[in-house]
Length: 451
Image (cartoon, rainbow, N blue to C red; front, side, top):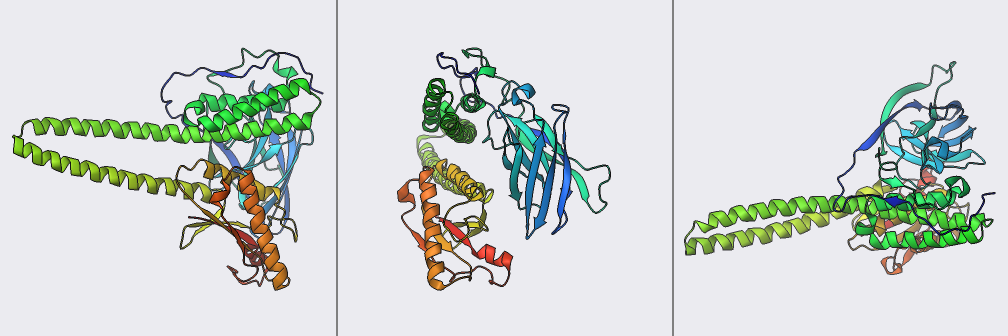
């Protein structure tokens, strides 16, 4: 049991210069990927890296029906703080053959087994030490990865790919814990993770670029610090507060990075525009009054046209970034009124409207993207089923599932007036024939129309 010391709260402090932070380059990692056979379970070893050589483990993969089921088991994970002073947990990542990366799951420190899945057939696995569990990209602290046994079957095809992680110094340079009243060894890891998430968000100036979201994270962190000191045995309570702190701090960090980049681009555009205006003024000074008036009129018209064009481009870029962000986490297609994000496959408990964890994760990511979008949008949620069961049963089930998705999005912070209603269409609108199990899984979906 973690001990509790009755001292005041201290946060990680950040030392950064005022003004815009320059964009930091991402670090590149390299790992092996394997093409897994179709319809057959394959068991491969997980080997520790020099950062944690005692780590052992295995992974069991079964690729079937266009998806890989993964069971990852690890043993002898060291305390994450032994890998780096600001680490509190481990995260398992899927590195696809196309160099894309997916977060599989946070690795529990006690029961070191992870279940998950991916749509990839060719992929590798890396396990990294992280400052908190809800990070979006891996750190450079790789402690274990997928390997091949010495007697590997010749049918397994393998290769090496490069993937992108967070900037090399994001979790190191500029972070300090000198004001902490207690040693990290006496503080529960969930509390440390929450502090790390806030510190990293502060480092990228979330207080300036994502002030409401960052303030919300600070408020919950304050409640967390009071809770775990007063009730150190209530692990469930302060762990929930810690996860929520990290989630909100991570949203603030993502928004701050995006908005800082937009601010840099805007500053560059302003400088270019000011330079152009100075040149125009110098040229106009040489003209007589009538020519100057005509030139000024033309310049004004050009500026107004450019501003209109910039506004149109910015709106289009915002929408394109929104659509690209959503397409990165969900299956999408372009509809007549906007983008349709499909929550398809096995996302609900059988014959129920209860969301499974994989669906909640997708919808949480979708909520984070929508909460960070500065433009206007409306959501329409439509439930669909396959042909199994009666029309009345499927109609009711499709309506319940659509409403379940709406309720979850509202719980995540999406304003209710952005989702005025839901609809259920039962089995009436299949996107493929209901003649096979994979096709029926595609038809069992909830479509989210973003317009």
